[in-house]
Length: 317
Ligand code: CP
Image (tube, rainbow, N blue to C red; front, top):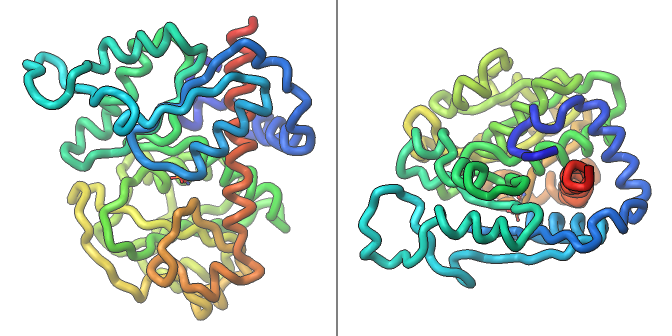
């Protein structure tokens, strides 16, 4: 695998799932394949799970790992072309990325949507420069529009926890005090469309995802109706795509609570974390036996390990 940015990069989902379950069962079985290889985890934005799980996955494969919080530990990077660099950014991504590519065998990068410009975000202005200039394989650890390591971990979690062949999976918008990117719901929908699940997305009007993700998906504006018979409820906030980056609602009637979960088929509760308690979900639901958010986060090691393993196999060819 040369790059990991979206669902199509993983190939056959059933094969990927089988590999994930093998890796989970025996995480150290490939602990020599990364010897003398270096991965850099480069963060433009904060992280707990992605940073630790990707580092752990690389270590399980015997790699050397460099973690760089570019805003704290590096030069501030200019990302615009054709600008006079007389401001507070002393280095351009155009030099920084290929230099990093000379030091490292794989570059993993996290760069969120800025919400300054929809076209720039949806054309993946930062990530695409990494792909163009790195000269080595690139992994997205969440870009402006997608979070593929999270979605892969979500799929593994659903596969492990499902009690029927084709579960009903509901992705629900829930309120949040701040504007959050669409990367997690975009990727979740992108992956679930390829998986053997019955997917329903529910959100207030105005929160429709970009057509490239939402096309062909069942959208139900009545959250209670959407929850009926659900086997999995995945809660997430996102800002509006059409009124780009705007918070149109903080309506707490959309918070996932016990009354809503009672409409489901004893659904498992999922969230990618970090989660705002009693905004997105009540304490009672997230602390209940049906909450699988910790198992879901644990599977982030598995998804990262499959992806890095495939990249090392590509490099070792
Ligand atoms: N779910 C997730 O990506 O968590 P972090 O932002 O902590 O990495």
